[in-house]
Length: 473
Image 1 (spheres, rainbow, N blue to C red):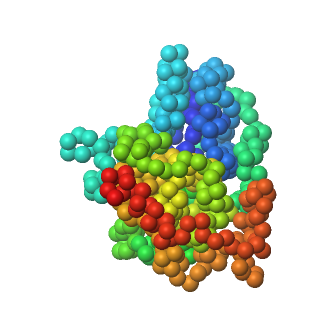
Image 2: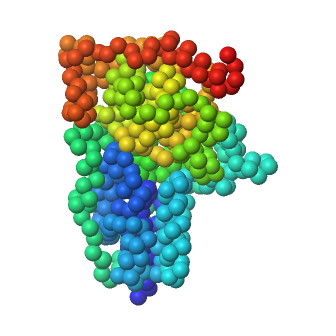
Image 3: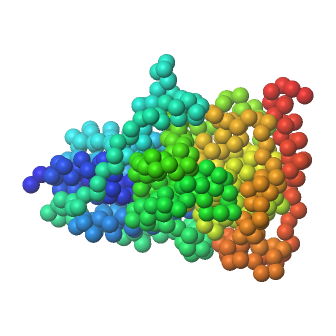
């Protein structure tokens, strides 16, 4: 019998439009799907690891339905895969590519270690529409600004999504597998796991249904509605794209079809998908985006790096006294997600009004967001802070009060998430107090806090600090 292939699944937990899986089926070899709780998973924050566990559980059921299994192992990736290859007689290990620095370092170690033992390793596309090195400027470099990048790829055909296999060839015997429950992937969420679990949309089937509903009901108005945190105007697919429960190509194909049908918002939806591509393009070519100021001149900026300061603590707890900021942070603790417009306001307030380093915000999001994405999170924080590529101009300081009036005109967003001052606050607002650590000592019946820094004061402080950076009074 042909030696089996180990299919190492990571952020590609689906059957449809899966290049690695499609090619593996074509070989006719026995296939052993594998998921590892490895060093990269171990390093993830509480909310991403919790949500990843739900995705693994769903994907295992999908494999069972087509006569296969998902083998679970824990440990450093190279050692775990080497052991599995020895136990199963596998002579090949395949996986879908990852692009963040931690994952790339892991994959390079695995590739070198297994290749040295004569075990074939192959990596496949599938997490992106366009591989980062396939998009070049006319001079052969990489793009540093989004609009030229968009113009370079908007006419490209990423290909049609691949169908799901009806069945996977199974090995003669299955290797031993760990129990997912034993990993306790929700442990660090503590009591917040029960609250956030009510708001997740898990698995490939649910992700496809979410895309179909969005195209049928909301994509027409997406260009305007996507900026309104008070209404359900976005696709919500960031959660599913993060874990590969749906492919970007499937989303792009649906967006193209909607655009061809004359739905006005489809073009903006396609641009948002390509913004995700741009983030990975930059992270691939400049890995420092994830951990250091992309623009070196910002290394001298006077940000506070004290993540435990009173200002940073108020921000983390949704107690800044700025309703847009606080509503957004509370939305994150209850749902595990945050509206994109709100992310900009939250980021601007931390880095500009509070003059606190973007890395503190980036790390906090990496612990609290179920749709945490290493590229989008890094680019988003550096874009809003001004230290990154394609950055918002240093003098653009979002006013959280005027932004709230513009994008939450009826007060629905603040009502949904801020309990203080309401005689009968909704469950969403009360759930914030049930989700956060009891050690914070918060009470929905307490008074709402005064601003840590007012909108006007924060703007003046930020402009003064930016003027110093540029040598201007």
